[in-house]
Length: 454
Ligand SMILES: *Cc1c(COP(=O)(O)O)cnc(C)c1O
Image (cartoon, rainbow, N blue to C red; front, side, top):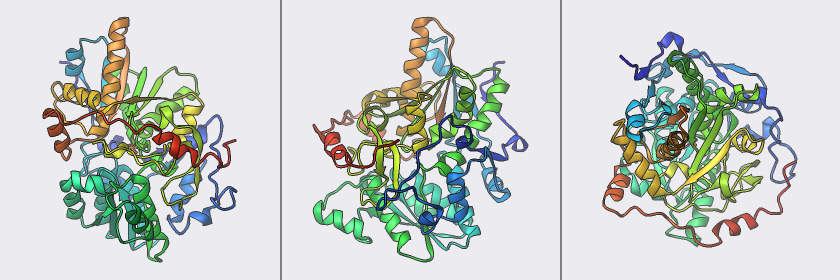
């Protein structure tokens, strides 16, 4: 009998995260203070993050131990299964071998608890009583609420308004684990009130919700802030995904020629890819594809530049691919991919040509999702479906060329709370959202005088 799932036992679960900073051929450009334009130090981040996470953010150690308390919670769903997508291969009639790492098995339904659990743990160790955050589609809010519940920390979630309205059950899920949720822009912060005064019907954006959560944390002694993607330490926590997958691919007797993931801030893609990128540094020829929505084309249309992580200009300046921090992406259903920037680590690796970007439109992405549902069965999150679209394209290229490529992708989460999007698709209401002419140019113009990345 042919194997469909590759399982690791709990004792084979990795005990360390992989820090790719130790192996970068060229180091990351420094993070800059927005006032002085000089590199920031750990003390600049101390109001927002616990010191242990700040240390991880800049660490040059290759391996970082995963605390026992974190491993203990990971064990509720980890190691996650690696699947060989035999039915999808058959449906596509491709000689390619397709594998996917299934992260939808976590309690929150995505990869995000891999970092939320770790972040809540380090906050708890340093006596933090309350954590604020933003959430786009609601997956990060769910994951952090879940994590704060385990460690008895109060949690407040600023949820992007368009998702708050589109996905009421995500909100209830966040509340089920104990966190408080408000739609962003909200009246609870200066950043939110400023936007509401200008644009009362603003759909919100991740960049704006970040401003609100950061302001809340920075103005309260007992509160820290937590980010679900983008930052180095977040991407590092996700590497448990790729480290498990490496062992599972060995069990399968294959090594990927192509590694694919969707990218919002970049964490699920990095988590799967970075342990394999380490091999590319040593000469492997693997191709890495980071897939984004055509309506928020950070990697494929945004320049590599210094920019703020948020709308209200409260964060330090990060060197990254960006559409400009004032860019408000159209309200597509893949809410988790609506972010103006991209993780500095991924942006850097794109610039150094280890990773490439690709962009797809909403309708073709849902076509791919349906092809997946009707072969493999699992209903993917609209975010993950971006990766699936790229996988199908690559599998069809392999078919045309008659090559048996090994394709690996991260199925980052399930779409059980996205059925309204599927409903729109079936009733023909889901359309490719055209970006208003000049939107990107306008927001990029605002950052053109920022320091150049050296
Ligand atoms: C949040 C989310 C994403 C996008 O975030 P990344 O940090 O880029 O991974 C992708 N897929 C799912 C299922 C998500 O919940």
